[in-house]
Image (cartoon, rainbow, N blue to C red; front, top):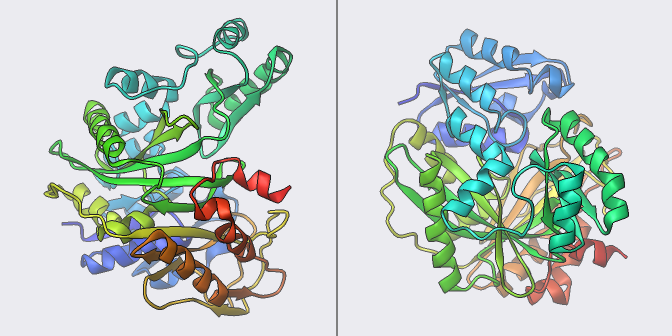
Length: 444
């Protein structure tokens, strides 16, 4: 049993983790930058330690600063959340070598899934369907040869990429010659790994991910799928569970393959296996994310399982005894961001008025409070509005009702609440005909 967990993150996910720990009877330590001194996670934790200035490289990404906080507070576990150091194998290894438990996959597993090429090789071995493309990293000559074989358009991806970065769409050979060296330079600059690989670009696919939980005893349970097709520039905006596009037969087939994949890599904790679904109904493995997802609440709403608590319990050595997951209803999550609803440009500022929606089937995960000043240094996520309904139609109507109540206003602060209203009212979303290019089409 952990006595004290250090939360190596900020914002709503830090608040979420603190609440889960409190319900488990575990004390918490918040770390914060100087810009986050007044953040809610600092107020809610049992202890708080400042780890540096606003620049995330000198605070939330500063491993020595975080490990100093672990040592000073005598925490016996670290919860990484998502983003920052959550999928950094070096950080996980340093935590473990300090005789502190890292609440997540092992460093070795993070190394495997962090290397997209290696992960695809394992996926192929266990029978997961792959997008046609190169067999590993490519040179420019190999990329051109592969593109001629599979046909344009193609996409260049960084082997160590993630979070929507390290992706370049290429429409013809001339573009490939121009974009290849840029893609390599970006991969090296962002991820410290200049390797890139090439895949067939699937036009207007859906983005489907399967949520998994795995323990150290080899038990793996799949908590169904989520659809994350409402995106802009590869950044998810609306997620839902289950997906209208996944049949019960296909759900069972992919779930079984996902379990095999997780066992093959020795996965432990919560994570997602990601797929693209093309217009002809073909699924293609993309990658695995070795962390909690921003959109995990929609799965919690339809399964009744607390995924964050299970992350912590698995790290304490608990066995997952769930044999069959009971699914109920539909859930939709809308990411409420500090950004202009038309241009999507960041719009931080001070929260002067805050009205959070409630009622049957409505959940809001946020770190906001009246008087809080949203800093410009981090991700623009302000809150997650999650709604549930017996039917998808009811969930959409409940979402529109909750959005009409949600008020976040203040000096210089704008949000994308109106954008979500527009999406939920479209015929395409109501009928489940949206895809990852839908937002760009809608904004024209």
